[in-house]
Figure 1 (cartoon, one colour):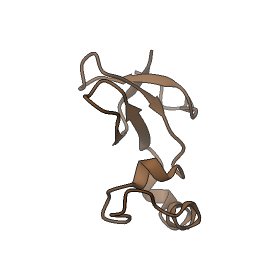
Figure 2: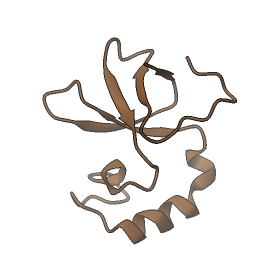
Figure 3: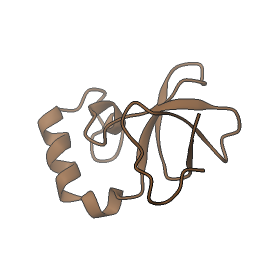
Figure 4: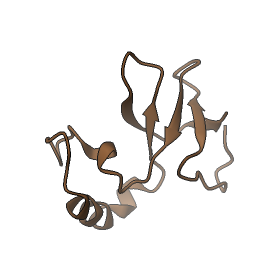
Length: 87
């Protein structure tokens, strides 16, 4: 697992301790794909400027969470995770 003080950078390939062998790529917290289909943005393609404003408003809640585009499902899926390990 990555150390608490290590920054997880956008584009880093990761795995998650409780997801087994699944691997994914860290997205920016402002990436519309990270928010598509959520309660905040139920649409499939949220407006990027609205996503950025939402992230700025809730930055404290998102501090230890990272959106990851997991590519080990039948189609890529984004989940927010906090227990990540670099691949």
